Image (cartoon, rainbow, N blue to C red; front, side):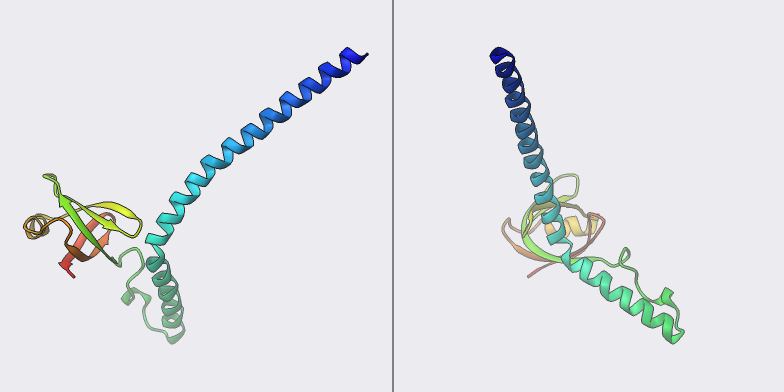
Length: 139
């Protein structure tokens, strides 16, 4: 009887240990995903605020009878950011160090020619839509 009890307790300890281990490992992976999404949320904070402003202006436009087509939707509006120019690649990809870390963006041929003359470490202000910079200037 005593052997049976020891076996059952051993099995219970192993199962509980595996459960705790599985929970701990699962939480660390989720925390990494949460941190990544928190960084992405920080980089889009201005976009989210603008979306709320656009929603208010859209409903106000509907109440006044004016067309909502005149208002620029959030998806069409470029995002304005600033950072430090890290360099440009041959494929017209630029890297900019921002508050959330280094980010890469595509450039048009004209903008690539413009920034290719800049030194690494130059502070820049830029607008982008969908990973493509539309305007960029030195700060």
